[in-house]
Length: 277
View 1 (tube, one colour):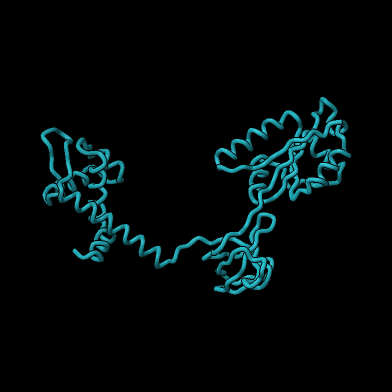
View 2 (tube, one colour; view 1 turned 90 degrees about the vertical axis):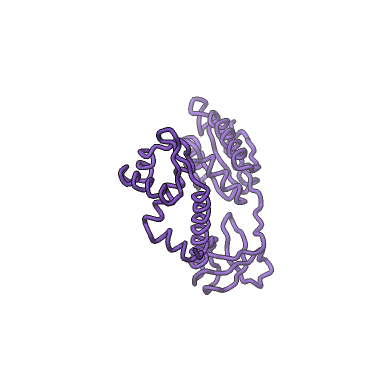
């Protein structure tokens, strides 16, 4: 049977696709096959499954053993399964090609762009931005999927080159607990020096003491929840993250960052400093 005709048969005729499913289940579970199990798996009545078994046996696809529920596929059935699987794979490949399914890389436009236009790309504060393709700062290039104005998000395809992402760092500043004086026991001058020297892109805070300290320094928090994960993601995108954490939570945060490093095979760099008087 021609390939195209076989694709049409298995996909358009419900009976042929059901036969394919039953043969596949028998292949997975032979020789001890329970029609009831196949019925439940495929959502078909056991009476219908019984009729299919008889039909498959008559067509030479199925042979019964000497024992009850003892069924095996014939070489003819194995060949049919292979042919049907190839037909399904071919169909899926054709559909993907026709729909032109492809990954769209997100970016932010810095100038008006049109669909199909080639643009240059740079990474800034963990986000990809477009520049003119002729711009010397462009580290990679891509094709715009839709029109966009400056400041708008857009999708890109056919990326070429590699956008450089510098490794960010996390500075964990240890603060005293409420019992040890809280924000009143913090050396604010020392903490301010830590902040200015580190020059963070983002600030994270964990707990009431940290929030009180930020208020005294007239700083605002960018990250307040899921600190460990958020800080790790930001650092992996090239951002420096300054985090205020009460002493007893420092070890927990370090453990979580270490776990993220192990799971993602990254090397997120962190340092701990003490801001207590």
